Image 1 (cartoon, rainbow, N blue to C red):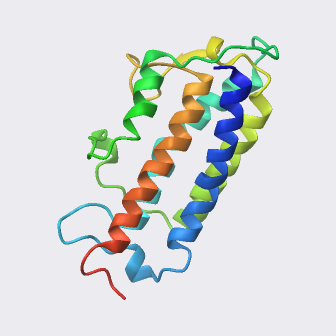
Image 2: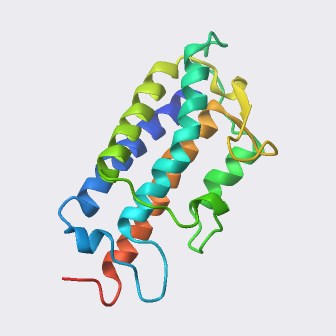
Image 3: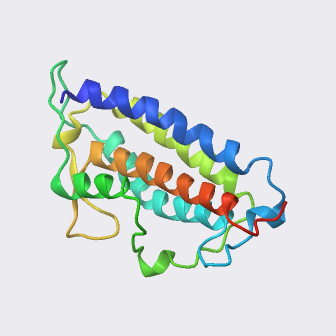
Length: 182
């Protein structure tokens, strides 16, 4: 795949990632946003907080990489994720529950968590556009959560976008759960 094709796909999916949280929870009352399913799991606001908490370290790395001079992409620049990034992004498409790092197991939502996530995704968009001319596969670094997971710049954008889309499905399940306050 060419990097230009991957960037185009990320742009489309980022639009969904930016619009979906407000569509899901923007009209919910506070008691609905903090409701926990009887079978366990996070509330909608806890999911949003999790996305903010996980996304923040990735943004820090991406901001540093986007600000530094790096290898430029030509019009036919190939795109390929590193194995760690490919596995992470692939896992976000799975239907089964995945473990999370202990630090993120019980997220306490901040005031204005929806707006915080919207701001974060706006920064992702800005960084994606700012760095689209770099050869993403050649801008490499370790995951902010595990030095054993090698990523590149394109992997990090994929992780941020597809992780959010995965968790929006989780919010949909919470809203659809039996006992959700009406």
